[in-house]
Length: 623
Image (cartoon, rainbow, N blue to C red; front, side, top):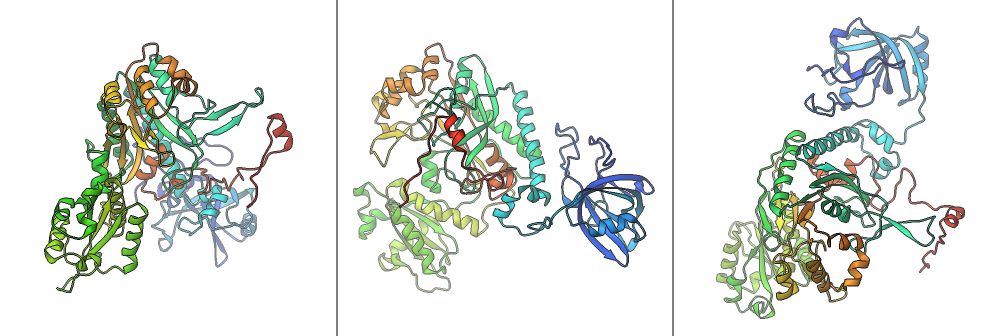
């Protein structure tokens, strides 16, 4: 059994002079004072055995001098106490409920060979208690805090402090602290200056909904919590800060997802003056490489491959591709459109549509409902979905396409996607993006269900060349498809000579294993280019000045070209820890409905508070 690193800082006080998990055979005979929670009790023939567990703590300091191992597992934090019936402490301990806190003094003894517990770091020793002080008592727990106990998320969030005692969450928080320090250490070493930008700012008309903060001093006026420090970091570039970063708090009133925390989140905000897209890519790959190397055992090949937005959508059916496995979407328009009379395929080119196909590995014998679900998803996206099933053992081919295509046509389709007996071929006909998206959803599901993705691989990739504009489905007008402050490729000339749908932007995402970790862009720092870019999206010059006055004015005074990115801190750490839900890496998250079950937020405030802020609550009418 390996000994622990005892170089960690530890300050003795009246409650304890040692950590529970540090005791070893060479401590036998020593008098120790310990403190912690009563984790378990066992009455064995008059002797009372108690597991005492203390708080988690790092084996090595977080600056990394000790190698970064993080202490915290339950088995590293527990020592067995022994109490005899003739002691006053015996009856006191016997009455205590589990999870009460105590301080004990006693002598370290070697366990009898038959009682050695190889599962515990302290399994060779025990402490014979001489005295006991009850520091606090516990009521009956709402759930077990055993490490592997099965507890629902609502209970875990309501009693988050008890959830932490189970162990894994605190271990992740300790590792998260190391993650943050590594980010600061690395970026500071690369010449980035850490700057804290304001949390109370002005509402922005772009992006998600703002969280507004009413001003008591200025009735009827509001601050906004920043959705991101976007404008501030660009103003830092204008002000002469060459390289900036911060682990920035951001606030967005938007729906929750597994990889997105509602309400608030953190991002590794970065910006560089006199920099190109390539400069940003280089710095991010260095940062990510170090974080993975020091915090994970997984592989992360570098340099990261690059995919254009159009290519990612065409090949993977998403702009957040998991490139750890194949099963790529294939354009079979050429193989089918000119050689079949089936209207769905034959008429696609005349409609401006494409025919995309996907090899659904091993799906030939899936139930009809599985295929129907795909067909419904394709139809909801404006496409026509169909399929062909390739049974094994020479059985007849099945599926709608087996009745509509000739043997030669089916053979061409199968060859185009590389399907094998036992597979199915799914087809989607419609606009290019939508046709691929319907198949991309199936591809992602198959990769997960069939275990096609290497769990030990972090497959980062860059998605580049995003379209500058897209049509707003509600208004039918052109709108920014990504960041409105991005530089269009081709600059002013492209804006003046190309159609909005043809213009690409210097915008980029970094994706890992199907999760978008960050968006970034080369910024549009030229007022004349900004004015034209916003005009296409329906902004007058007056509206630009009104919406972004500081940035608009600053760009008139010699702004340098600059570029940046903002990897999601919580989301990146979630991927590193291989957690399915972002709430597993946040100390006190909101639930999926954006409620804080622990603190009871959001909550009503008193009429006096509203009056002081010059506010009146108008509730929606009940239906």
